[in-house]
Amino acid sequence: MARRPDRIRIEVFGPASEAETAEHAVSPSNEAILSLARLIGRQMAREQFERARALERKQARQNRSGPMR
Image 1 (cartoon, rainbow, N blue to C red):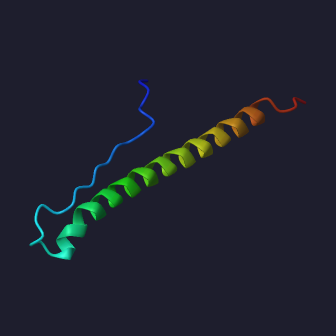
Image 2: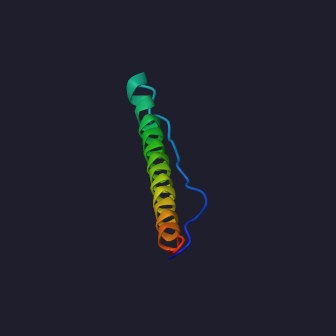
């Protein structure tokens, strides 16, 4: 699997003109923040899932290699 870069670069640009309202000026940065939050949330969920799967595999190995009677 190819190594992913450690950093994600997100650029937020201000409004093109001052005629835009404050609501429209904030929108691009909110969009970037939401995208970043979504990426972080997905990564956290992926890591949590991987930890749970690793624990299940560990418990399955322990059950298989338990004491024989």
